[in-house]
Image 1 (cartoon, helix red, strand yellow):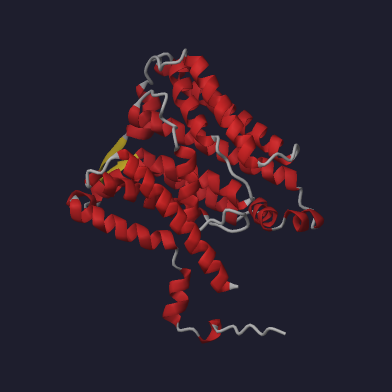
Image 2 (spheres, rainbow, N blue to C red; image 1 turned 120 degrees about the horizontal axis):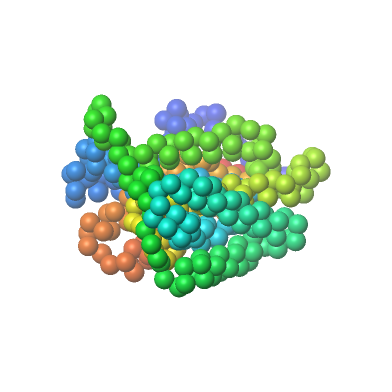
Length: 329
């Protein structure tokens, strides 16, 4: 018989506190400190707000992706949803500000349909989520290209772009406060409540940890998985609206964002096989990746090296998470 000694009761308060610190937060502090040394303006309130503004779309993507990962799946379609949101926004509005709000409503309807399709294929047809959402990625990208004729056309109205560009001025302490940061705070708070404060959230964890046991306990596994993919798709549309405000219309706006969102979640401590993760960790992971990309840009390193660094940090985060799980139990 093997006896496992639990020394957690004998651990010092400092050691117990250290175990609770998210790995992504530590890396974020280090990377942001390095960014501040190279560009001191980032240490000022206005610089920090601008950093959060640029990190907001990825953090929102990660806030939705975490639901799918915790439930035991992957959603590779979010990047294509960002692309079709930006392209569709320009096509539907046709530079007319009066069409912005109903166009955004249509885009959310598209996201809802894509999320339902992803969830139904995975939950009811028992297709691996990696394959199902890879197919959706290709299909949605193709639909976006056909919609715009293979090249972006038109512009997004100012009231569409305000979610990524608008700034509140003369704000105490920070002086300027981007609307994008407010949207991020609202989405992250809603996601945190949905995953950690509701019955649905507890069922997402149960399905990701052990779907068979969850089913025996009365959980409707298919419904939970369907809901997770819908949440991820709607977060992708939100991120797309914001990215349209940042850079305008581009066919490459969503390229690679699905992998960045997954990487952000993993860096933030989300377990790839499901059953473990937090919204706070996912957002912290997104901020960490943004700080890393900012640092590499300030160092003048080329884009291929940035992608290599992203892969290395993803591998390191997965390895660290596996090591920590072995230490725990």
